[in-house]
Length: 354
Image (cartoon, rainbow, N blue to C red; front, side, top):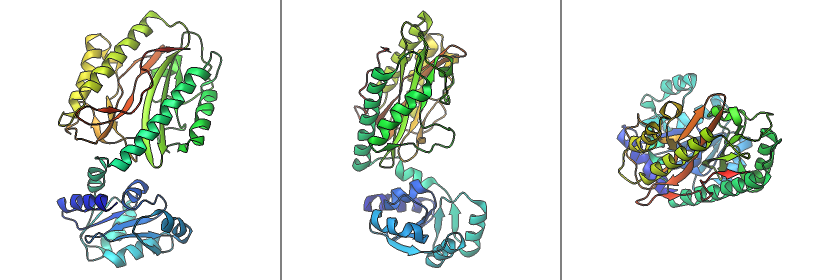
């Protein structure tokens, strides 16, 4: 935790600040070890304070590391307590709320809103974070094994989700709370698979379906993300051809991952191969993204990215092909950037036929 705080302050200094104030639970957790409703303060001497309503104070004391805890009433009480401590400091905050920012600016003249110090610090994972991500990935592999044994023709997408989430929760893995979906998982059979972010439905699996199974779950705060596509019996020749193309594309992407490589080169490695096979228009999203305390965080692995990979970044590589009204295919792994990248998922990428 001390090293994390040093990194945060170093990033803050680069934009002319000596104090960080976080409202976001992910950044609060990264800074303090506590995930909850509170405001976190990190001052230039390393002193770290959590300002929390009374109902959160007990847990904040138990879960945080080397933090002072201040109790305050929700709303203006929390803000007033923060202002009293740092009103003369040069402050950076991740606050995205306009009215709160206006209130803070009245009392703290040298304050700016920026997520940069937080994301720039979180982008490189420490060994504790890597071990948690590896464990999360192992549990997801176990869930793919469950898919291979429990999936069947006539089963609803929602029924498989229930089986998988029951196991996940038994392993202390939980929904990420990702705001853009109503479901914890993506389980998309047949034509539903052509929607990269399909919602889980009551549709039953049919013979000839491809089933995109995207498992993105949180373990001890951290998100691992992997996808496998299963076949329900005999599939069409086009679906089989497309599957092998995605598999080879993903293999090429993984091979290109190493420190100092441009993120857009990973995207190109995957995308160029799919283009060569005349499926380019059907690969409709970026090749990957960073993972950590959020489902999508830095770095972006896309043709637009200007970021170079660095050792101990955690990213996904997930090319796909999506044919409207027919099928979708995606193969995804989470990995740690090294000279020889550490692919954290071991479940086969060969097509598993149920």
